[in-house]
Image (cartoon, rainbow, N blue to C red; front, top):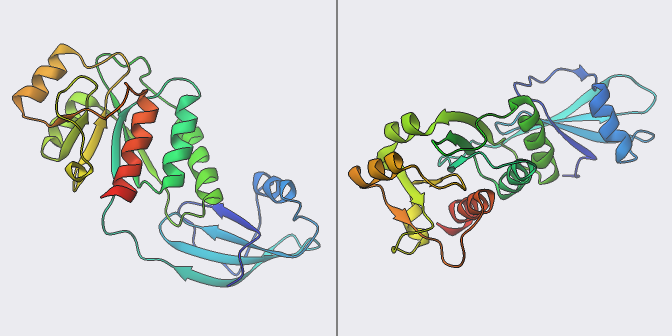
Amino acid sequence: MLEPGLILFRTGFSPKPTIVLSPEELAHLRALRLSKEETTVQIRDGVGGLYDYQFSPHLKELKFINQTHYPRKTERKTVAIALPKGNRFDFFLQKVTEIGLDAVVFLVFRHSIRKEFNLDRAEKIVKEAAAQSKQTELLTLSIESANDWMNAHKDSLVVFHPHRSEVFQANRLINKIPVIGPEGGFHTDEEEWMEKNQIPRLTLPGGVLRTETAGIVAASFLVYGT
């Protein structure tokens, strides 16, 4: 099967005999210098559906050619992490998307500096990274109170902690969700809660990592290392 000239993600997409590209999608086509020749544009719905359309420079509408469907992953890989600061947030989203992570839960801790993000902008970053890395499924994003979410998932958690004596081993992540806290560290109340509930707290070898770096490491182990 020939590689498409352009991959685009449209969540909730349903195939039609013809479609029209948005101005932003046309801009992508021009950036790849494909707008003056016939090529295949592949629309991906983010849940395993791939839909090929024929683009012709002299026609406004693209014609449907073919479709392929990949089954959804049976094991969903999730990382729970404090919101990275500044442009590190964008970098984190790009890299965990390229790795093939399935979900990120952003947690707001007591010491979190950043407490919110623009979901539409973040999903746009994810779609662009997913298209470039040819993913068939899209990374899903959510934001939760760390206290509430961790309490609801306490049996599934492994916390990456910079100051614990127990050294990290990849097999500790099997069927678990790694949690990465804020760079300001965990609040005393959060530490006491983890101690009370016997949440495993593991230290990665090497130096203390930034939040987004620890998140990328966690995603790599989840997808490739267990």
